Each structure stands twice: as C-alpha cells, then as structure tokens.
Image 1 (cartoon, rainbow, N blue to C red):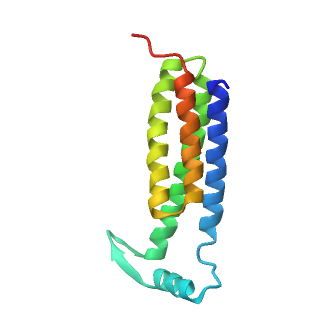
Image 2: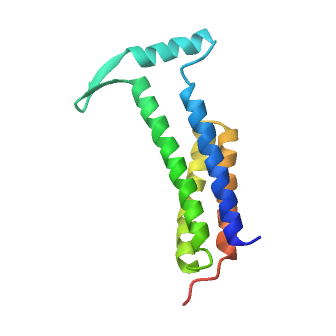
Image 3: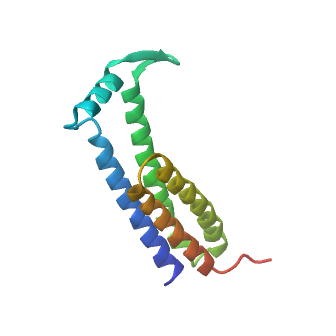
Amino acid sequence: MKPKVLLRIASIVMFAHDGGHTFGHLSWKETPDPAKREVVRQMTENRFPFMGAVRSLGDYYDGYGFAASLALLLIAAMLWVVSGSATQSPAFARKLCLLISIILLAWGIDELVFFFPFAAVFSLLAMVLTVVALLKLKPLPE
C-alpha cells in the first residue's frame, strides 16, 4: 500500500477516535450509578479560586476533555495534510511522520495507563500505519 493511502487511513482512524472521544466526553455527567453521580456532583458543585478564575474540578475536566478532542482533531488533520505531501515532498513527510508517530505512541501509552485499551487501539493503530508509511517513503537525501 502506498504511503499516501496508509496516512489517509491513519487520519480516518484518528477522526473516528476524535468522534468517539468527543461523544463520550459530552456524556460523562450522565450515569445511572449512584456512586458515580456522587463523584460528578462533588466535581461540579465545589468551586475554588485558581489563577484569577473560580472553577470546579468538573470545569477543568470539561476543559481537558475538549482540549483532547481538539488535539485529536489536529493529529487527524496533520495526518491528512502530510498524506498529500508524501509524493511531492517525501523529506518533509518523513520528518512529520516521525514526529506524529512519536506523539501517537505516547498518546496510546497514556490511554493504556490512565484510560482503557479500546481508546489506545485507535492511537496505536494510527501510529503503526504512520510508521509503515514512513518506512515506505523515499529516504532523506544525504
């Protein structure tokens, strides 16, 4: 498979990951479990001042969740853009693929350690596709 196709597949995987993450994040406060509802209540009702703003831990959780959605979207978009430059500028594509691969590996490990394997599969699959594309790109001139 050509590097462009591999990178487009990786991009689609990350767009799907972003969609799942965003949908899941939007519903984090809705749970039938009484213990979880109590945690959500504690996170959203108790506010405290920090660096000029008064926020709850729930506000920060929302902010981090939306920031992660934006970061996943950025990764997906970068993969799509670099796929277009794979044939026109392989040296640039190799550098960007290496960088994105490292970030995806770190993201996948973070998801395994702090979240759950299903989320990590998306990041690690995109990382593998990106590494394979990187290996198929023409080497950098010496």
